[in-house]
Amino acid sequence: MVELGREATPLRRLADVALVVAVGGIDLAAWGGDRQLIGGGSLPMWVVPTAAVLLCAALLARGGYPIAVWVVAWGFTAVNFLVPTYFPVGYLLVATFAAACRVSAGAARLILIGSAFSLGLFTYHNQLAGAAGPQLHHYLVAGIMWALALGVVWGVGRLLSLRERRALATQARLAAEAQAALAAQRLRLAHDLHDSVSGAVAAMILHAAAARAFTSDEHPKVADALAVIEKAGTQAMGELHELLGLLRDPDEGSHSRVRAPASLESLIERNRAGGLRIRLDTEGIRPPTVDPDIDLAAYRLVQESLTNVAKHAGAGATVDISIGWHRTSVTVAVRSTGGDGPVPQVDRLSTRQGLTGLAQRLQTLSGTVEYGPDGTGWSVVSEIPLSPTGIQENAT
Image (cartoon, rainbow, N blue to C red; front, top):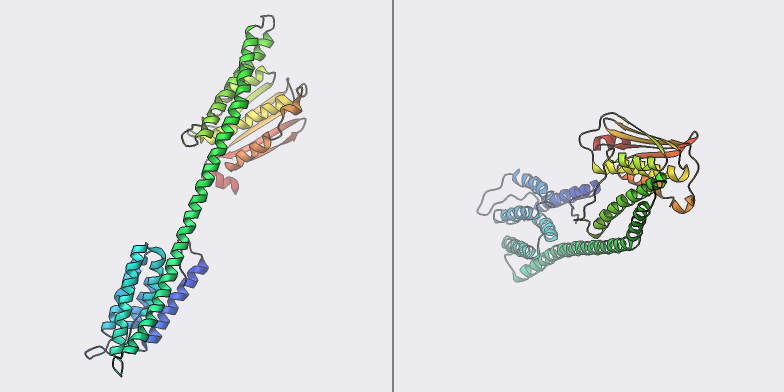
């Protein structure tokens, strides 16, 4: 039998309709038009066909309301008390199977008892209406037939229910194991970051502060450079601690999002102190509420671009940063030219993953990024949708 899940495909729906129509057709064929009532009289011709249509319509809803549909099919078997040669067994068997697939074990047993009771009454009434009168072997044969049919239908339904429950339990167990493995991996990563990166950054901050304290007033550029190192290290340490908190406890850890362009000012000032000539141009009106993920993505784009300029173009490079706020998106462009050449050991400083990771971050926001040579310099241009509507328009 075809049983529908909550997300049935059109093919399964068609098969379900075909099954119900077949059950209705078999029922009407088995009825044969007998309308003779117990005690005399006859049943109107339209009653049984109309009831068949209604029962078929009810069976189509058995996936969502298995017990209610079974009660309707079981109640309709009472027509056997009026027409002893007519028993709508097909509807009852289909409803019993659907209920056995979906209800608890206790409810399924009660449904089995109720269905067996109806089939027993049908056997009794059918033998009473026989021409030769009731005979014991007739009862036995008919009872065994109905018991086998009901047992197979109910048993297969319970097996399917058990299999589905086991599959759901296995799925839940695998999901829990995967979650536990991910938590353990996060914790190991947090420990590794704390033991290696955090210690190194802390040492860098302390040494920069100590060196700046011993730098004489005759070397102001050295003092400024050490101050930039100390400030950048302090910010990196703060973000690292927030990241470690998120890794240790994703639910309770707070990941502070850097907002742009407000946080860009300190970023730009640090890079200006490092020798870059930076111009910032903002167009349009920033919306009153912007998703923090969008702010963070824009900030990281500018941060990664300035880092690359410092590494590959060197001090003296000119950087133009433009931020444009539009109705459905924000555009961020960073263009650089000039410079005194790459800093020493640039290959050791570069992971060659920055722009790739940036593109992946923007992709999660349905944003786009393009980067490459731009005349005599280099440019990075991105567009990020501000809302689901903007995302859809951007995709179109």
